[in-house]
Amino acid sequence: MNGKNIARMAIEQKRPPRLPVALIAGGEWYAQTAGLTFSQIINNPELIAQIYINGFQKVGQDLLWTGAGLLNYPVHFLGCPIVEDSFSTPALKGSVISSLDDLPLLQMERVTQNSTMQGIIQAHHLVADAIGKSTLIMPTLWGPFTTASRIIGVEPVMMATVMDPDRLAKLIAFSTELIWTLAEQMLDHPEIAGLNISEPVASGDLISPAAFQGFVKPYLKEIITRTKKLNKLSGLHICGNTTRILKDVLDIRPDCYSLEAKVNLQDARQVLGGKVCVLGNLSPTGSFLSGQPADVLQEAGECTKTWGDPVGYILANGCDFPKEVPLENIKALMSFQQAML
Figure 1 (cartoon, rainbow, N blue to C red):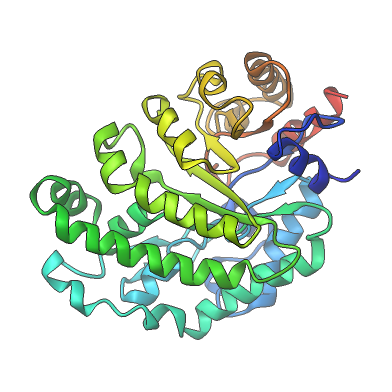
Figure 2 (figure 1 turned 135 degrees about the vertical axis):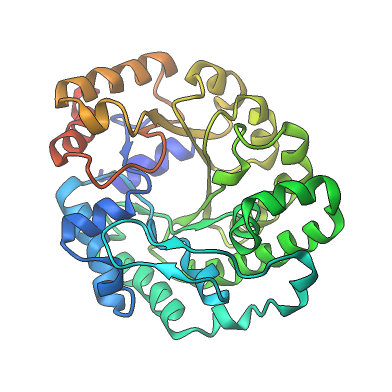
């Protein structure tokens, strides 16, 4: 039984023969490991695919988020400048629109018909062609709330939750349709198992549970429902401390939920255990970044001990990780799958 099957068993709440281990996000680590900057790969689908294939061949994770590091490009194609001339995750500079008055100026076709965006979609399929039978492949995209925040800026979005909720809802609805139009094309491959949605701006460190319920939850639920209707798996990642919205996550009902180290795994298990598979939640900037392999294994052991019985759990880093993380530390995390045999 390979890693793909073992990860799927965990997601389906079955008892796997060993604990599945994943490496979530990590786009800039993949680029640096391949020795290719994002500006060098972005117009070449084969090179885009190669950084993820290369990373899998070096690490052997059971679940892989393709597209990590590329999530800002749809907003760039809408009209926001981007900095991409290094191994670091391409960063947006500014915003697409300056106020909600400019909503009518947004044109989804600028993204969906962009040749580079189509190349990115093709790259997901190329990865699936190469390794889709060995690891569980889930393309990742920003969620609707985060996409809206990239289009106009985080601060204007936060203010609009109070001052202009109706027009903010229109922007988030636009973002939802944009994401789904891209996701549907990515999912059109038999070896792509599902879709992961990342919502860092929906973090419990940034917004209240009430704001989450009003401006995040309905749109995530829509995307996850559509994903499941295609008979694909749905994944969700939210940064920061999301303890107060775990019941909302249960109601959204992704197949798997990736959470940060700020969330106690016992709390997550109490709410999600047996219903939603949990990925987590080794700190990406603790021993993983600056410790030794033995430290990584110790922290991994603490995670698994806290979760308890391994059903419905995938050991993983809790969030995106820097390109400086040593390969030997990543391999140590991956080796924990053997330690649990």
